[in-house]
Image 1 (cartoon, rainbow, N blue to C red):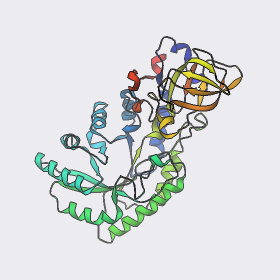
Image 2 (image 1 turned 45 degrees about the vertical axis):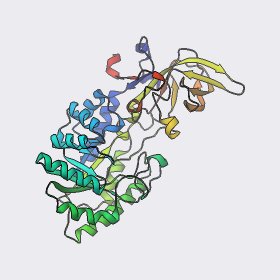
Image 3 (image 1 turned 120 degrees about the horizontal axis):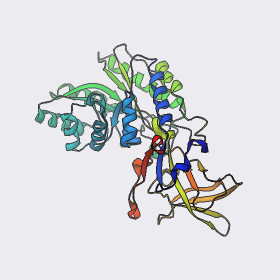
Image 4 (image 1 turned 120 degrees about the vertical axis):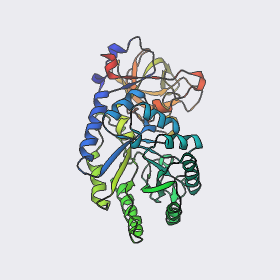
Length: 386
């Protein structure tokens, strides 16, 4: 939808850059709050790894969400953006000592623990500070997800989490530690999941584990099911806001919570993906032997998902209303994998045309690099072009 892009205001702005439709972001956040708010014991955290642009974080913080962090740097970013420390959860398979100490110093809500050695280190570091760390155990439920292999995290062979067989022993050990308090169980089966059946399978597995604990008279305070809800990359305008109603209803219907339990979600991609676009300009149109290329000034350094995951991003020529032609859209990076798309239909391209790569608000700007000594792309909010 070219109308949402104020291209007349883009002139003079260095490309490539990220453009964030903040009205859509706020509408998405309002929808999440409305749908999750139908269930009194649902609590939503934003997964900072999806997009840590300070202005984006500030808008999300204003919505009242908590923050899900996977590094000390993300904890700092969340705190700087104004997220209350008691609404910050910290996950990650390789937490370093300084990152754990940072969380302890700020009394964050919870550490999502992924191994027995990590639990022992947290207990030791908390003891040194005279504190008690709240911990949830990330249990690997061995539930597959219908998504890309590189973003599936819930199978037994993945590096994440504690196996179901180890769960009882780790809980027992934690109960004997003086400087950790076991408060919950954490799960996450993957990302870009569009089949609600995957979430139903997770619910069934959590129900089994909960029943097992209940037989031992253990009822944990908090269940965290991670995130994973996907978005429509092919039709970003048709479904700009993901189906949060179906997502939350699935958990309400299939997960057996006790009255005193709180269910936590860690949504990332579904919150920010559709509000962001990478704006680039055509440098050259090159005619090959059997195809033509639109060579743009953005590259895999600015948006790595197509090279890393073979991910699809819808592309639009914002400057042209001419008849569509077919191009391989490629960047300037000295790598053969620096390709945004092959056989892409775009309105006829000319040097200087603005091209929008849609659905780039998640894992776009945050994953940018300086490879080839390139400058990192700037992220702009829509209101900055008014």
